[in-house]
Image (cartoon, rainbow over all chains, first blue to last red; front, side, top):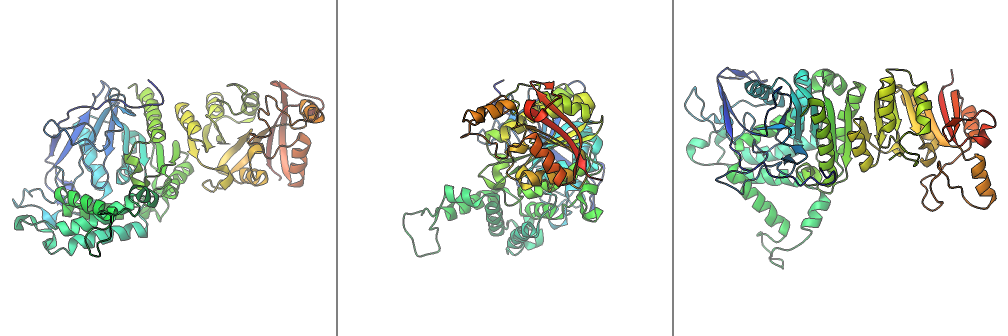
Length: 383
Length: 201
């Protein structure tokens, strides 16, 4: 293998699968649902001793579709396809990789727009407010179903990384490695503030109807659009936006109107329209709450070292220098706590210009690092 | 990939391994590709971490199976608690630090003991090159004056005076030339100095 390039191949055409669970699920908030489904995809083969499984946890708006494409929708490429596939940094010739849509999501797993089997109507406002702990618990049930006692690694970026971190705390025996990329041990007041703007945009949309809009045949698209715009801005760096758009004009001149003057406005509107078409507002509300509530240190008097004390996994923590949403300082808090606990940890700070979104993009140093780390995991688990 | 071009088995590694107690906690500042930590893990069963700034060396550490934290030593060791390590090692990096005094202090804050190795500027071959009118270039000082990262070179006599004045207790010293221990006139005959030191009690 050329150690400097990880071009690799696509996993090709993939098909989502559905796991149905009929045992009741109790959420952290106390709510109980009688049954639920999780949609997932897998790539590669589970080896004979079931030791080569890797769970990929998704962030805010992503899904179980991590790699490959669909036969009926070839343009729909998995969100981490640049990292996962045969010969790629997470090599599906060696590892059995699983992507799962989380509970409360809108890509097929049970969520607010699903039918509540108790009422025969969409859950809507009645779907519980979920947490990272709930997600991780539901993922263990999928692992049980697939016959995976212990993951070789659980990985994710951003909110996905929070799930890997939670795995190490809640189920320390069930993973050997945690990849915690572009993460934070909790949200700052500024982070929560952005989420609250997004929520208010949705909740105050007249089409929201308190969350029960499905049966009225409307969706709070205007609110969802604004929510997406706010979020999107926080994922990019100032420099990246300056490079990509600067003050470029859409029509070469100022219009003296409220139509799009600048390219950045046009870009945001396009992204917002696209998002509002496929994403569910109730899911968006819940996922922002998942982020706001995540704070493993909270139950330990703010002491992250104590919160992470149960962890047994080895960690790869990665941050990106221009990520101002979850800055490198926040990752270093995690590293510092892991060091206090004398755990195995490697920390890399990638000098990348792309802001928070860097974890999704091609960056040779970042991908080489992940490849080297997975090579080490592969040797360890005999993959 | 070792930092001074001496090849994989650097002569100071064996000296350091002799001093490090088995199963201890070791922090290696400027750990390069992690060779020393890997060596100490194998020889002494230590729990170790390296600090390194360079992306390529971080990658090499991952390939060597060594824990490494990317960071800039010049910014201090604020991520590390007081006396959280048994040993803090600074191997052939002291002379390249902008603030050499501060890093020694930080080593003794974070570690119970420190180990430092540096090229002895007082080595006779260095003195000879200076006498001939040139900056020394050798195995241990492989750079030319215009591309050297070394900004704070010192002699064995300088380092010992530094420790005396700051009440730093020298536990052990080893002086090496071409991997062999030097007994007499270390400041003249020694190319590489290895010091094991602690806080004065």
